[in-house]
Image (cartoon, rainbow, N blue to C red):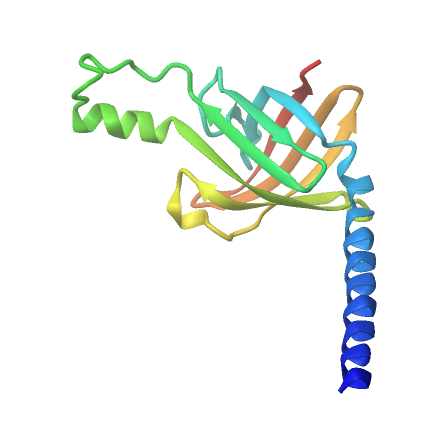
Length: 172
């Protein structure tokens, strides 16, 4: 019985060591997170249509937003159209006012992954404003230019395909 107890203790200690080694190995991926860690303010959000037309992407011509990344792989993002009309009665917005507010806001918190070899990363929403995106990765290409983080991607729509770009500036 004592021998079995010792074997169990040894297995438990070895397992703990292996688990902590795996955790340390996982934490070594924080090196890929390092360039992202911090707070970023949206400075440009635009879309180029297949005919060459450039227009605001998603949240109007004066879109505002913040991205916050931490070293453990967590992200919070919020983007808003600042030109949304205020509610006439803040305690009782009309259905149209609620719809306009909803259409002019996007946000979520969750985790993120980075693939530096391919220059891609993905947000994995866990707590989004839009319930349909829970657990759906949001991949994008990225690059850094000075204190700016630039995301790009393509989107299919009825008129063909467009290319979008969002430029975020590090908040100092």
